[in-house]
Length: 169
Image (cartoon, rainbow, N blue to C red):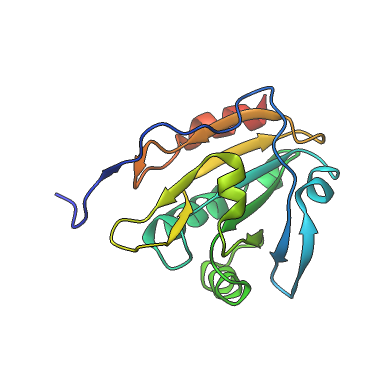
């Protein structure tokens, strides 16, 4: 029995396969620095797996980034991987160092991007605090969705083999 409650998240009105996701500009943090970047700048360089995750330090973020680091899809396939959460650039820098990941992470403390994507998760017991529900969108160069997974409960994790099949295909 887990030491936490599993929470049903209900329906999400997220982008589906074949739809174009909204563009955004936010601080993008990497191993060396951060600077404002747009999603369209990232996707212009090729297929992109956009990973929405819980705030840095929460166990789901740790699990997701450990899994993605270990699978190293960006080394095997023609795909780049970027993350997004409500965590600050400073917190992202710590997560990148502690998890030894080489991916860049967008910082969106106001959770506006999750709102635009229809995947807001209002945190129980934290009035006025929300974060994106866990989600993964495989995007082409034009930000068109090739694959979408959005959590229906918290915590929830994607079927990583299914995600890999989508990247492979």
